[in-house]
Length: 151
Picture 1 (cartoon, rainbow, N blue to C red):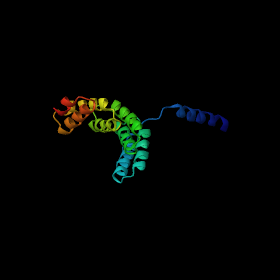
Picture 2: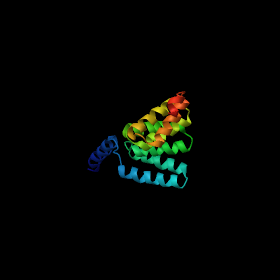
Picture 3: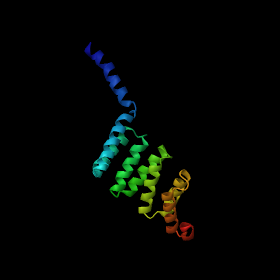
Picture 4: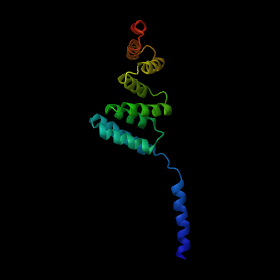
């Protein structure tokens, strides 16, 4: 009798194991807050760990990807930061903070033409923003468009 009762339980366990994991937004938000707190303490490795856990908890949470990208950038893992920013922007294309941070990394990598495109996006989102105008001008100067960059 006990062998018969075990079979349905085993079947349910195997069936449950085959189901995809659902995202846990609440856990991701908690881990994001832990990452933000670690950044404030200047614990960048701790922030990277927390943001990475947030990404694992909810891979569709753009802020988690952006946070992890920021921690990677702070650790000079610039290519990894750009990869995370790309995912964040795919999930939330209008997130200005991620665009600003992506611009910063592109500039650090001397990828000025791409940085100029980011600055153009920022200017479309906030026309006349003096910080974005300055970024765009600097980008243009670096790609040889000095007169336009200084205008």
